[in-house]
Picture 1 (cartoon, rainbow, N blue to C red):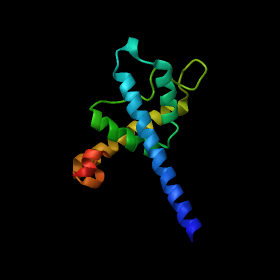
Picture 2 (cartoon, rainbow, N blue to C red):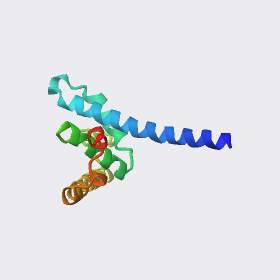
Picture 3 (cartoon, rainbow, N blue to C red):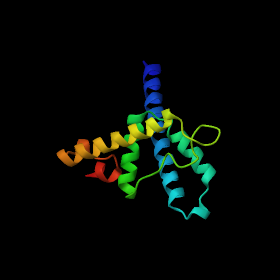
Length: 130
């Protein structure tokens, strides 16, 4: 029984760590993108965007929406030159992911505007507090 509870705790911690990692990446990307162009660490930001985009679309969309709501602006996870192709271009799959993430965020915003329900609110510490 102890092994099971340890495994369950480890799995829950691993899931929380993954969620926290994506949040940290998104906040870092937003911070870099808010700097003047000449101060941005572009290569680091592009790598961070690539890592963030590896998340599944629903998780990425929900987390991105929450952070964008808190900071009051959109985060560009598909900046020019940040694709996986050798020349930095985006593949059709990457562009499809961008469209899917933005569509998911739009759908979530509309649902929240319609219902005003806490369950439909963007995830943020402020919303959770209330």
